[in-house]
Image (cartoon, rainbow, N blue to C red; front, top):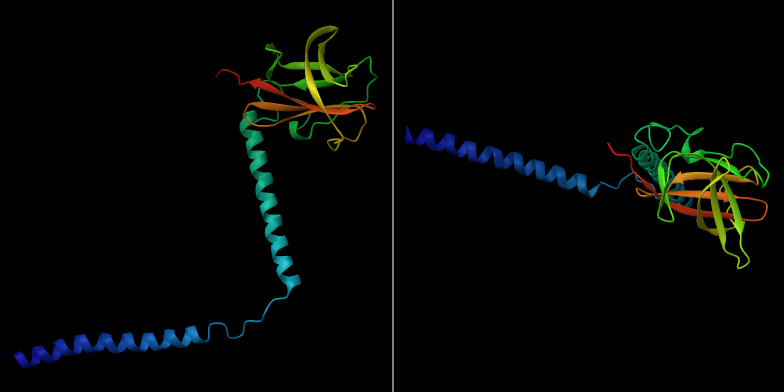
Amino acid sequence: MKRAVLIILFLFIAFPMSVSAEDYSADNAAIEHAWDGQKPITDKEFEEAINVLTEKQKKKDEKAKKKKIKKISGGGTSLHKGLEPMGEISEQEALKEKTKDEGQLLNIPVNVIIDGNILDKGYYNVFGEKDEHGNIYLSFYQAHFFKGKVKAYQTKNDFDSETLDFVQMTPYNDDYIKVMYGSLDFNAYTYLRYLPEKQ
């Protein structure tokens, strides 16, 4: 009886070892021939692969940007649900070309702070002016009532506007919006801190 038990025990121990040895030799052969059939890639193929990956990353970044705009906006097309701008805020274009006396119409869909004062959300005529020292200011009016003035920074950037005279805005980050102004005389931009609506 002891002899039978020893034989069975020996078979159990020996059988897995022989299977393991076969697996090892098969794996070893697979590793030796892993690169068989692989062709080297050219610089052009490598650049094409990098371009594809770069394009995917750009799309991912754009999606993240839209998600951030949606988060700031509360899910609507404006920064807050109660006031919808004309079109997407990230692609808002000038409503029409205006004369210097009329200013440029801008829908500000959130309350913002200008010179320590709260500028209520709504439509404003924006006027750009350059003083004798070369400083640029944007003034905000509702009807003929002056509501505030903020310093702006001159730029050669036309912000992809199709017209010479324009005013646009876009969310900048979680605390500021960016206002972009253009005229025949100069282009400028500024940042306005906005106040989130109380829930």
